Every structure is written in C-alpha cells, then in structure tokens.
Image 1 (spheres, helix red, strand yellow):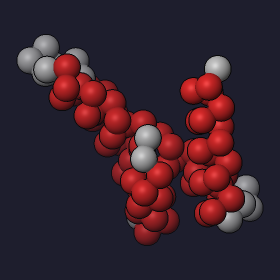
Image 2: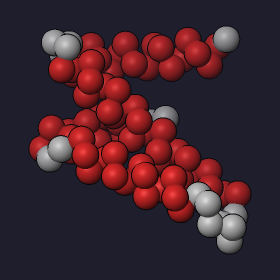
Image 3: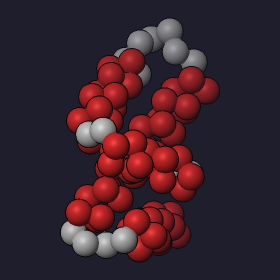
Image 4: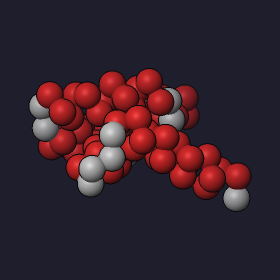
Length: 85
C-alpha cells in the first residue's frame, strides 16, 4: 500500500463517488480469474486493489468526523500493526 496513492484515491472519492472504486475493484477481481495473467501482473492488480480498499476505509473514517490526516495516520498505523504481527 502506498499512502500517496491512497490519498489520491480518497480525493477521487470526494470529487466523484465511492461507487466508482467499488465497481473498479469488482472488475479487477474478475480480471484476476483470467488464466493468461502472469504473477507480476497479478501482483500489480492486487496492489491496486489494496490501495482502493485503503482509500475506501480512509473515506469511511473521514465520514465519522476524522480529518484526512488523522484518518490516513490511523489507517497506516493499523496496517503497520497488522504487518508486525
């Protein structure tokens, strides 16, 4: 996950709608079922999806009243905490 990408996607959600990301995630999930994809291509798709899920989570936290900075920090702390386990 890359914080600048998540931040950019969060801004996209603000300017548009979260449904665009949800539909894109569904499309990418379907694409992963293609047997002709190589491992590195699947890795890229997975990274994109992770960033999109992260942006959706940050957007949800912002809707609870957190500032963008607070939401991003909390999200990244949670991600880093889960990696350390």
